[in-house]
Image 1 (cartoon, one colour):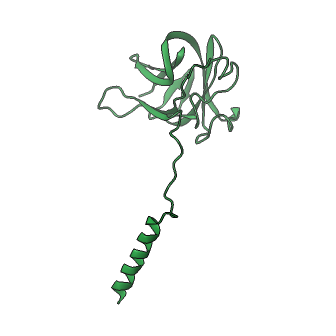
Image 2 (cartoon, one colour; image 1 turned 45 degrees about the vertical axis):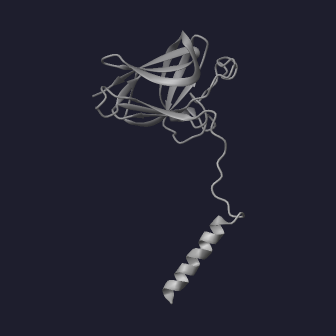
Image 3 (cartoon, one colour; image 1 turned 180 degrees about the horizontal axis):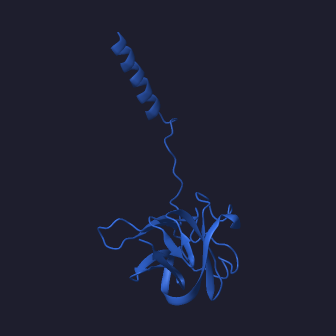
Length: 182
């Protein structure tokens, strides 16, 4: 008797789920600035030294720096959630030694140079919760020009005793040297 009761209950649930009134998960349109992830490893089989999770906005014909992203104001370095940087070893960022851990990367763009900021206040959206009191390190990086990129991108170039984290969008490039302490 018990077995029949369970089967009837299961049939009832199936009927509810298949009715036109029952709704499953609704998804919004695809994010126009999807998140991406980039790792720095010393070789293809070594554990990562640095990981960056960031949103990748697109230019879409807009004037980016100095317009969409104003000069002299804090920027989340990407789109949507603030960009997270994970250091698996202690590093030197600018002139500051930074302990292994997770940080948010912000920038204050300017025409000729940017101030890059690591913040200990993580899991935040955009710059709404940025507070200078959480700054762990700052560095200044010069602006250079290169080939056009439609989507904001972050990559790494191994330079022996340090690695360059490259921030790139449109024709703007920023190079941030990071020394990994082994």
